[in-house]
Image (cartoon, rainbow, N blue to C red):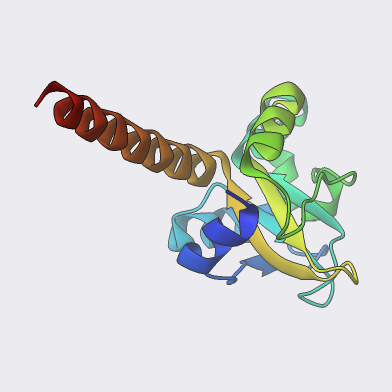
Length: 146
């Protein structure tokens, strides 16, 4: 399966914030949308960075509550790992595990934002694949036994 299979089911809507959004406002965006990360984008389609709950926690631990008034650009990850619709799910899962990140923006061939995939999305599709495989094997075994 490919990332396009996830995006087809999930949709291409991606929550973004401009780089000058303060961290306090970012917390509101995360809570209102019930999400764990947002793409930082000055125009809604280019990727300036990504910021997650983990980034906020680390910044709070390092610098204290003062970061709540700082822009998200001060705490975001600037070097963002991305993928394209044709990326194989196993390839992305391996990269996410190795890099220890949970959210990956999907980009077009032109480098424009085209979706967002979380580790939860990858796990969900992998479980579905395994269930289909299990059911096929069970049917095969039952048919062979009769």
